[in-house]
Length: 295
Image (cartoon, rainbow, N blue to C red; front, top):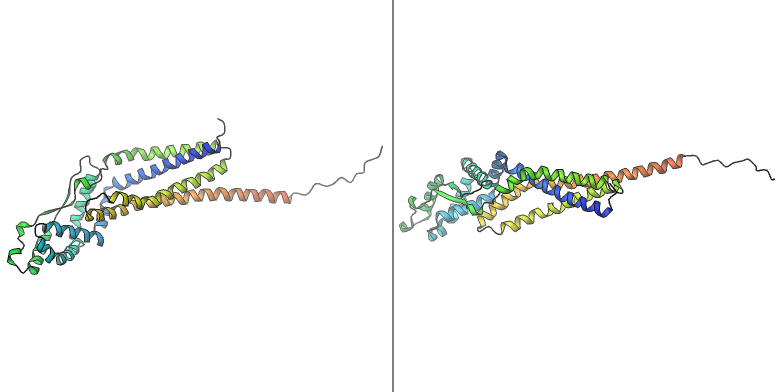
């Protein structure tokens, strides 16, 4: 096989870098979504964060008093902090884990369903607070009017990840094989393997850095389509938590690529300096002292 031109080698490296990014994403999806324990722990930790609990409490109060706007205005400011405290309690963690398990099951299911949480444990607190803050008997809260369940995330708000996750299982390893094969071809059949190796490190690092910078913008682009502020808050918190391992993967790829380029450059500099040093150490050729006889 003839040597590849620099342009051809560079194109192969670019395609290989894209394949490596696909592999990183696929492996991250597989590790995040197929590990139910990791998934549940991450979701629970997110749902117990203060901003998320504030959003969930606001949604609970709004849905609970949806048919009582006057009572919502009067008692809403008192109810929400109480609900926030309950959502952060250890007793509520069981409910959160239930919701997380449901989200895990539905996110990778072919037919997602609404994620519903049971708020019967909140009823007595809600009734007590609304009764204390409501001076009118006509607006007194009737326990019968309170729902037993609240829809935390509707089915149409759950990302359909079934086909994506199923494909990620085999796409990840395949993309790694393709990337490595392209790198080997580009470097092994290049006109200057050392220079091509350094170029490979730079392109791999640059592609990972671009993807790393794009991760926050992907959150913004996707979250704007969610219908409610609560769902956007929860989605953003979950997105940040779950993409953190991907961000670390990308940063590692950046450092590995730059490290590879640095090693190649340093090795070439060291080799060049050795040649110069050896050339200086060699004695200069002696001039002949024999006189030539004139004919």
